[in-house]
Image 1: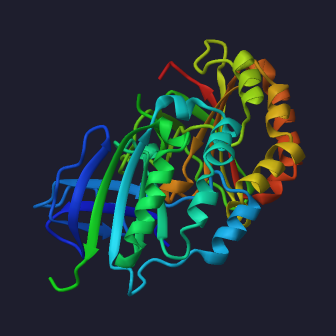
Image 2: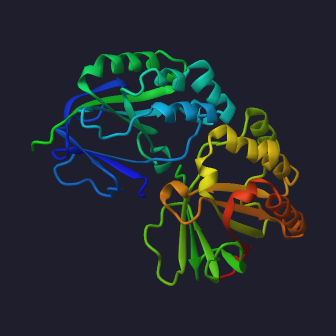
Image 3: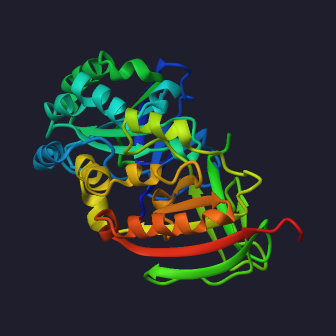
Length: 185
Length: 185
């Protein structure tokens, strides 16, 4: 199983871009489509504007009871009804990364309730967390969400709650790429 | 600052190999020298037998008081008297990686005293931890140690204590590469 994922912003791919906007810091160039590739894409393909490299990894903060609760309700990606997707690249501050494990965990969960809040939006919103800081990429994480269009309001509420949390005080760059699956092309 | 480190086993580099042996699982090929490169080495250089890619990263288990205790006594690499080095590539089991954060932390410190035992050998033994599992490499971690030759017995005792710990029950491959700095060549 290949843990590498590349998101290529350009003219190809299953996912058609409907909006790209900056939440904090500078944005990504608006493109027509995003191609999600389950591999490393070492060079920027022709007709593309950007490529974000990433990998899935082991759990970094969740405790056993949280993992069990998540696994009981979290849906798979690629559900036929989940025509909407959102890609959210995030970079956290140097101050975040200099903290010890217990300090980051306390802000992540005990103060910001990251897992507990996310759980309220399951099983509607499917999610894949990807890491990229260790690759020297411009972002630290990419989160990929998929849901049926009728759950867009619930998803937007989830974003508002996350962005109001103490954890988000350490986010120094965040971009939101909204997409719709478009099999026709 | 580049967080990427490559260890090239071949005929070049500052560090002359004095022993390569397997502790668990199969070994690495015995080479003459190891070249430590602070960058990614994408292709195996000519005259080389292996290259191990890795990166430094944020703290994964240590709590604030442990980080503070470590930083107060841990020495830098490249001390003039530290002519001996040991490179220890390790791969942990699938069972280890499937555990939640609190389960791995409990084995790492509360049961195995990884940080507490390591602290007893500071400031004699300098150490750099490198990650490689997320790169799809054959090992999960590389640990690089440097010390003056008169502290070899202390270092060997540290290894024995670590290998007797509960944490090491999850190590399924481990190789030990002993080196000596050799500026003459």
